[in-house]
Length: 91
View 1 (spheres, rainbow, N blue to C red):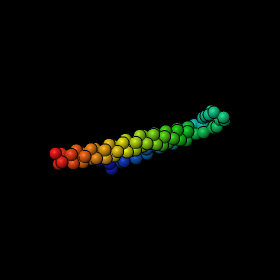
View 2: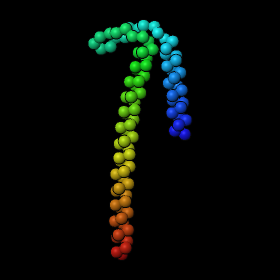
View 3: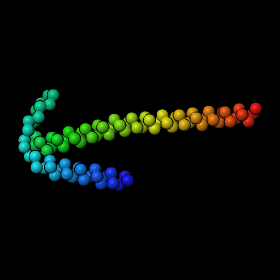
View 4: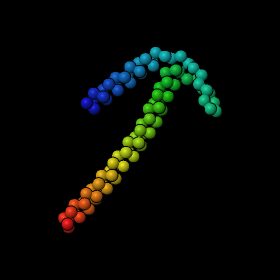
């Protein structure tokens, strides 16, 4: 299933690359302190990659936090069940 997702993502990327290569119009891009002339395909590709990396970092960190919390709660659960079973054996 994971391979299918990778193949689909790669196919979409190649389609976007093919369509972007047809957009060679030069546009002026104004950013905070300067401006520059870029090919539209280059500008769109750069913005897409930047957004993808930013989303990857944000959701990756959220996923990591969730995994660490699950690990911590599982450890607490094991300790709690160990204490509970120890107290039941004493009774």
